[in-house]
Length: 328
Image (tube, rainbow, N blue to C red; front, side, top):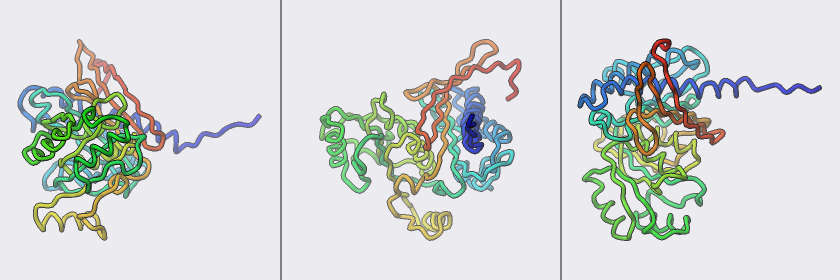
């Protein structure tokens, strides 16, 4: 009889995906204690502390490349911090509370988010703006392009989906800087969904078959752009980005973080996240992508999404946590 040996690295990777869920669950439960209290900094602080503690049990040698800021700006999960219990070297991108205002006001789509890749595989993005465009999988390569007009992109996407432009739903942040984009999209017949905050969930939604969102566009945070890219890689969607600079100091910082690269170049998806990527998110407040934290007696129920680019598998995980036995 011939025996089949399992690759231990693959087994470790699979276990690591579940460990990531535990990390985002811990942050989401901690943040949820502040939901609706109007205290976004306290909610964010609780999520950061819980996420940092949870990483102490994960079998990696991780370096935070997308985090809460520089060492002098953040006490934990700062850029360059080493986390994990030891293991393979990994880049870590985190947003302990994506949508702090959403949590504070008890509005939909507040999430806790973590992505992992092998060392050197995430863009080191400064805390500035990034122009972004995202569409889902199973479309012709280059169906949309950051350098094209919104009209051209919508018409190309409609043709690829064999639909009329009037059937497309564009999603963007509700910001004054997007007023012209919104007006032009509506002028050719597209519908528009506006977000108050939190564009990582919107980028993911643009890639899911059962979502109403067909395309996500506009400028938002560059760190969130890298997290979105990690998720888009996992679902085999398409994304482009470009860093937006306000002064020479920001350009110099981007050059320092990514030596030898043109900081103003158009970023392809794999410029932002490449290799084997793992992604996990847990809902804090309910939304189109994930349900929020629910409490019932001694139990807390979490709803999470975990994905891996290598397999393309998307898992939704519902956790029922008993606080008589669980120690978070």
